[in-house]
Image (tube, rainbow, N blue to C red):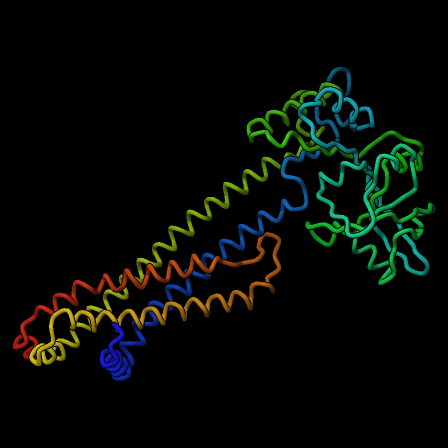
Length: 409
């Protein structure tokens, strides 16, 4: 294999037959190139769909009140449903084993000001559990705590984008900002993996918000996470039970689908998981077809190469070359060309992905990458399979008698 004379002959043959070498190498390089792009695209879609759930806990349920669409129990249709603090306490008291975290949420658009800087943002009035449900990451300071809720303190946790707008490079912790006509002390800065929009929120204690606005106990939404050990079926069952109980509590027709909206992340996450699994199967199937096409292409080219070199083989045999030497020479040349071309196609494809991938901005597409081990394995399979595809014609050619080979057209 490492005979210098053999490799000299191989390079001489490659130099002499440039078109043949190019066709063989191109078929391998193109197959690997397409395979890498395919796998990277599939991974990009998988990562994009999965990233949609980075913003919230996967075992979370969002419950929003709306307007009834059906009359029921003496009430007319088009009645607006309102959640209050009592709904939170009711769920806590009746689903102690099922509920992990729960928080009310009260939303309002506000104007925030610090010194000469002013901006329009949205306030989310919540309880401390909201941090775990929304996967809020504290960059500096702290999130809201129980004392803030119980004492109805005027404290605020601001998003990273709010900090950049109002404070620039100044440390906001301990500073006072004006939210509408009320002053709040900044106790923390948060980041969010969802998107920049999520980092333009202000978080304040829900009790403080309710006190400032007509001393109400109304809330806009209920967020909770259920027992993380639940299976998909158990999660859906709990969600359905919760909907039935809330409809009964607010005297809503059992078949009314518009009065209360429950968004169970388990359903969305399950759909995405099924879809990404299907993408995996498709990518594996298409990848195998690409490899098969590459193998067939290599095999055909090797058959042509061997036929073209029949006279050369006859001369070698007449000079005393053994059949195994003929086979070794043909296959080593093929291995060299296919290996060099395969890894060349792989490097070009991965370079293209590394260059173009970060610039692709799409909600359902992120980080289009592929594991190096996967591509190296595919390349090796393509090369080895291609060699085996040419092994039979190589053996056949090596068995031809010299006189027959010399007289071949």
